Length: 333
Image 1: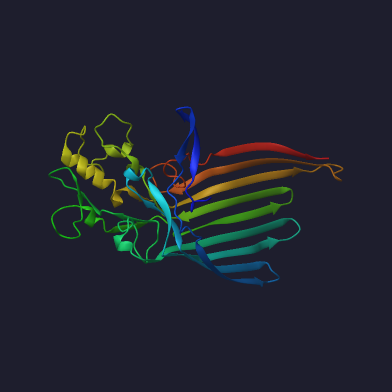
Image 2: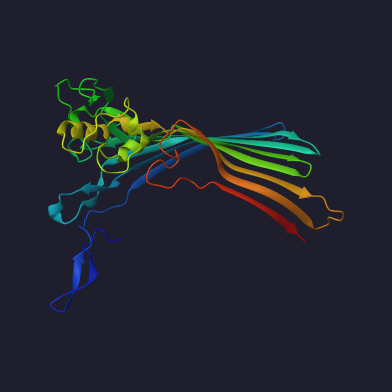
């Protein structure tokens, strides 16, 4: 609020008996709204008396006059200032769903639902990108979640150090060689749900799936050889370079470049049994409005993934989703 005005914050400190005021931020008198244009088209189909239903939706959202924090030198007293830039970002994608009634009779029912999302994100235009503070991070025509990295080629067997592709051929690995593009936007994600009822038994479960790349455990690692907790991956000689306590400059430089390379990107795709519920309604002599149901429920019970750095859904900085198993009895009188 009020970022177009020069604002101050009252502090509890006093100066010569007076209450202190600190500048809240650097104001921008030309502060304005972003502009968004949204388009969506959808199609719904029902077949075989709606036992098969299909929905498809395409969305395309473009926003410009972007509010962006421009980094500033520390001498200004603030790390950034919010400004509007002539930047156009597009978010688009497909959302598909399929619902089927596979079997339905007096004693047995089986329904299936499949959801699939194919998202896309793209930087359409950025006026003056090459002269901005985002020149090393953003590429027109690519997602804004793009990572520009060194291309890791392995470990030199003679020096024991990481080697990277020299894109400009000058014999020196520098920031100009960060030409490997990694996109961490999910390629697709969705779920498959099934509901099965047989007489008094009910089974309900959902499988969640995601196709994406993620930052692995090496992105926050410290140089192997120092007195810090380390991931077990450093014990693999074909993965990690030579160790150092920090005194070998070549090892330190190579490791810092490694943390800005595709070596810190892994396949984070997974399939997870997200929810499972099994219940049984106990037959009573005189049911009427009285019912008794026993049930067992579970969440995050089982995961298939190639990712080795923890949980692929929350790979870094977050606790993985809890696995929950519960049992209960439901009485309706």
